[in-house]
Length: 423
Image (cartoon, rainbow, N blue to C red; front, side, top):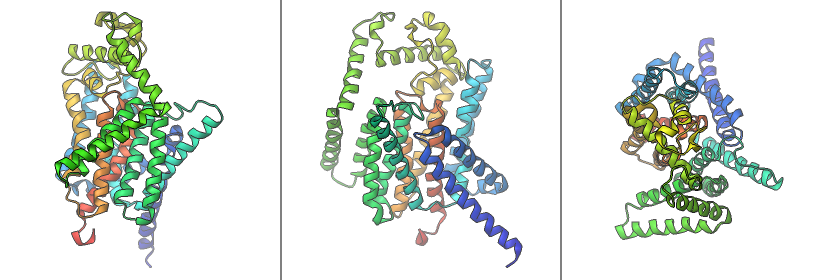
């Protein structure tokens, strides 16, 4: 064999092995060993970047919808950068811009990398299963040792959505997975993942779980008559609502409801008795909204919320509790406050376009269906979860979204390029 041919074959194998290894190390470590996962993430995005640099022509081999999505991502980042520098680089905005949002752009080279390297379903499934099992095992060990387990790796409100995303994809492997021998193992993995969602103590994730389950139950029941669709959805909602009787859930929900009652019991924004978790969020949202009203076009720039909340709370007539908070705890108000109406529109497009790409692809088999629903699940997870949180201002969510959306969008793209009889 010609030495040049041997080199090309070897390089191809090395790229595939490296990509698979880095993906597995990243997804297994991310939830509970986030700092270690950042190393594997960095190596993975660099692999994708250099692959795209040396094969730049791949960009032309995309659909109009894919190119639109990538263009919107670039515009979204460019607008954030413009609003940040126009507003004289407020607060710690540079860290948010270059240490959070910039990394989301690497979804683009990873898309092409994952389209080149076809990670087998068994490998993806194994990675997701090991991730949720490791997370639950680590939590149970901390509980057995009477040690605090919340906040290990990342904030609990960041941990919950990632576990929900992993659990949901495992459930999709149970329903649509091409390997029938792994179906029941996938269901067991889903239950393990849901247990970690419960242990996250994240009320926002619990509410997102209910919303996602209801939406998917109604969507998947479409072939049936309307009365069956409503019935199936009602049964799913009833089963989810019964989780209220779990002590770990009941205590958190009761405290949340008490917080809502306390907030509306007084109209005095200086009354500290209103400041439960709900009341604090409301004051943060008010602050973000008032910042937006003063800067509706460009916003006040990334990093401005913390800077203005610390110094302007009295002028905004909100409780001083907002002093010291870095985040608005609502991604959409955060977008309005820091980058104005154009920033919100671009953010929504970044999250909605993957759903459009997935829904417009004509699937012909279970593997394609799994990839479509995985994209929809991940996107909706954060579209809904961003109402009580601002996940995209944090590194773990940025890493998870960029890798998982790139992976499943690449599978849809690859399948779309294959002849129908080969899918």
